Length: 327
Image 1 (cartoon, rainbow, N blue to C red):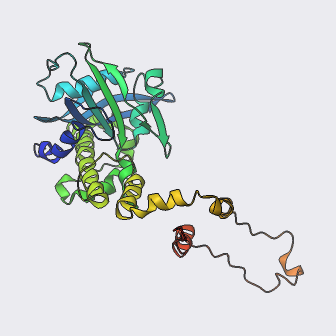
Image 2 (image 1 turned 120 degrees about the vertical axis):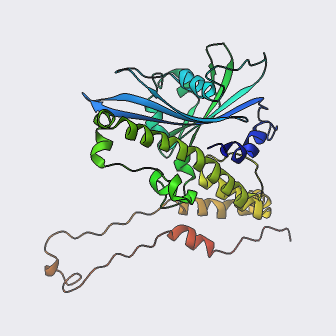
Image 3 (image 1 turned 90 degrees about the vertical axis):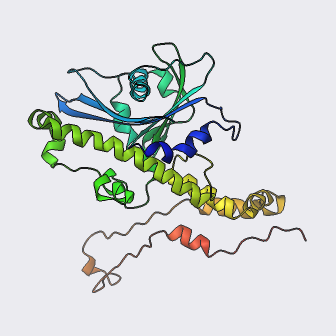
């Protein structure tokens, strides 16, 4: 995985540049996280945490086994990721240096639920939900054991996936090499990871570590691809594929911002309100009560309800652009 340092190089540089009044960071780490567990007595018992970490000088992928009933706090997880690429020790951060850790997971709901302090105010008050998955709306501030202050952001790689590639197994095929794809195990082993660990500890560890390696590789691949599609260069970390699509549209159509402003002019108020009221989604119902053969409207007839995939955007694309120019 050593090549990951160069793959992430542009994103390390990005975090050290003041774009859109964001914080300039001195130290940056990207850490893909995953947890393995099994169900017992209606609760998930954590078996292990996996962390694939990359800094500007090192990359590592580790597994941390948990005693029964033990879970890691967010600060412990972040500290373990930083230590893993610094020889097992915290580096000597100079006072005042700003440190950023970007935590990446595939389906962050699962990994967030595995944290011991997942419901702590300092975490939840900084989260927002995108398609039922928690991600950070602003940095979560934590202190490491040496009192170093660290900003933490959550990203979910599932939100960057194209249609048909939401599962990590499917997404891993985007890496282009069979040897880099996610390992697969039987459904029985997935549902009984504790028994899998007991029976085949080497296989368990290989399976667990592959997930974080794949996630770390996919995150940079997808972020690069979306930035190049939207801007033709690296400008930001996207939270969702949809956000990249919107930015790409605005980049290719600079007229749209002024167009939106022009639509606020008084002469368009009535038309704009009508359009907004009309665009509320659809409700389709089709049902019969009683014996359909007793009614001429339904007797000897076959009823077919036809719907179109993507009907609204397709129809809107056929609408001409409103002329907002003066005169």
